[in-house]
Amino acid sequence: MIERDENGYKIESQLAQIGSIAEPKTGAVNFPIYHATAYRHPRLGQSTGFDYTRTKNPTRSVLEDAAALLERGDAGFACSSGMAALQTVFALFSQGDHLIVSLDLYGGTYRLLERIMKRFGVDASYVDTNDIEAMEAVRTPATKAVVIETPTNPLMMITDVEAVAKWAKSHNLLTIVDNTLLTPFFQRPIEQGADIVVHSATKYLGGHNDVLAGLIVTKGKELSEEIAFLHNSIGATLSPTDAYQLMRGMKTLAIRMERHEYNATRLAVWLRDHESVDAVYYPALEDHPGYEIQQSQSSGNTGIFSFRLKDARYVEPILRHIRLIAFAESLGGVESLMTYPAVQTHADIPQEIREAIGVDDRLLRFSVGIEHIDDLIADLDQALSKAKAEIAELDSVSVDAKEPAAEGKGV
Ligand SMILES: *Cc1c(COP(=O)(O)O)cnc(C)c1O
Image (cartoon, rainbow, N blue to C red; front, side):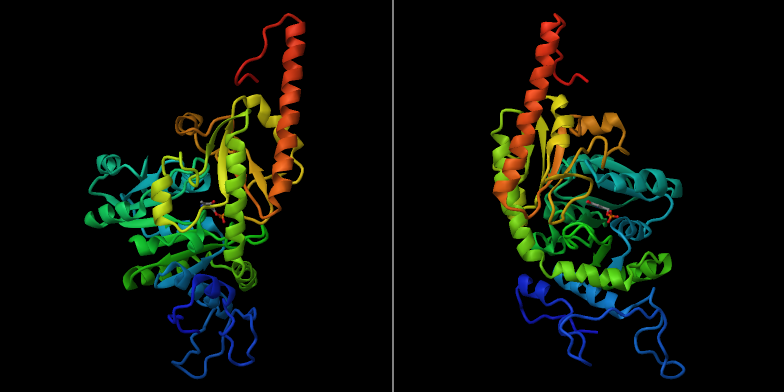
């Protein structure tokens, strides 16, 4: 396979050229899909480097090398989904081990930890990972790692990766970062001291809502060997066709992220100033509590933010009236999607925990696509206006009927 390309190309060039010089036989400018699951051995005791595709596949290897290069790690591993990547990483831990994990975690990761890892005796404490004292308070001799998402989703809480990694290292803990929301184009946690980076490549890396994939990047020889063993042993590896599809998406990551960030920033400001909106959670805005850390540890901002409406009754009509923006789960694709976290992505997190951190019934998450900003604003504008008119109509009917007007988060 290709040697790691250390000749100093900028990340935009590395992305556009994924796999383009890796096929010397024909010179094909994008790497072919090797469907073969078995590889002929030249003779006893010899191998081409490929034996069986779960262990290593030529197409997947190009993707894995690219992932390691982009995230500045030592080895990359492509998995069949983001959850498969997380499960493979969590298989590092054994019965009795304990993890410190970000609050406001992706719902699927919470479910994996609480409903599966727990059965195998691996426990997790959920704390604000920006609060070293809070982490110190839950740390025990059994603690093995800190698991961070930054920003979190949907509340966009920011963790100082360098500070956490430094603290973790001093206690011999691994630092694991889910970098799905920023991608290596904007944030490279390994450069800030993390040991492992995980991605749901289904999101921005793939970028087109058409491939399910996960990535792991490790730093250090021993850890890379351990993950290689688990990746092959568990076997949740990415198919060669999906590896190709993912690389195709990754080639345009840089220009997509720039447009996602531009559109999201414009929309976040527009919504912040809207009369029906209570709050906007977006770390690119200066009044966001994580603004300074975010701007210092990342070179840009994700295309996702959340906003809280003044009235929960606006949620249903807004989701009914948006036209260009789709009401759908997932994030990170070129198409704009709006999600209702309380009933979709975060339904597996108990209501009291959800509401305590702010994922309530007035919160909407917006994964801003790369459509024209004017069309996105116009779509939101008409949906918000119609929602407001419908609720005003309901209120006036109930006033006319001499009934008390429904208030606040009625329904
Ligand atoms: C979607 C997501 C995952 C899970 O990834 P899948 O590819 O859906 O399995 C994990 N972490 C974050 C932050 C995500 O957004």
